[in-house]
Image 1: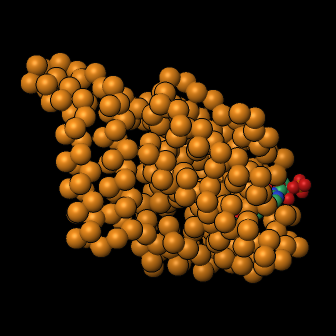
Image 2 (image 1 turned 90 degrees about the vertical axis):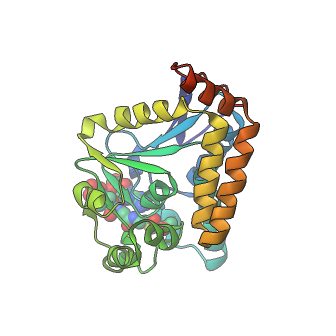
Length: 259
Ligand code: CAA
């Protein structure tokens, strides 16, 4: 599949999506969001992909939605943009495979929101993360008002969004916005290694696990526990469950087949 603003690559069971609009710090216009959604469709449909890493390269993750595109937009076109952006990020969040954001440099506005839609965030020491939209007379419109409070709590999320201030990687790790901070030069390799480890697990169990967690977070505890029980019991119809438990008893490594 041809992409204008992304590079889509595969290594082993891990696919890597690199935002590629360096002149404008990977600013996310509607086309970029559309391509991110299409890259997720590609990863979802490919049984040879078990995990995904999203990166903006070594200098910048993404400096947000494309302000030049938005500056003169009217409410109807912004509503459409929101559908495209939220739709793409929903695909990232709901991909039934782990998605890891590898963050170097700025992850601002829509860039931060893209990272928030990923399951796990690895940041470089000099990364700068924030939702500065309030300084533009708007607020985050690609999921930030909803995903950030769920991740770090309402008070911290409000502080970030009300001030529009950027925080450094150490602070982001402290408040749980990123999982791990590593030297700048090791961000991508750390993310890819982690993705490759996850890619070795049983793909059906991983998909069900992600579904149980995500759907559970979107509902009340009793309904979430019900979802967990249904997904959990379904796994006992898979060969991977039999292989995993048999391998344990035979004291060997399991060979999962994703079925
Ligand atoms: N949209 C469009 N172009 C952008 C951009 C963006 N979000 N961010 C940077 N650029 C462009 C700049 O206009 C500049 O282009 P020119 O060379 O043609 O002038 C180029 O990228 C390099 O940027 P700077 O010269 O500004 O680089 P810097 O190192 O001095 O500053 C920065 C870096 C602090 C990230 C600064 O570029 C910046 O503040 N960017 C905007 C961040 C922002 O406000 N993001 C939120 C966007 S709105 C949003 O995301 C809405 C939503 O929720 C969906």
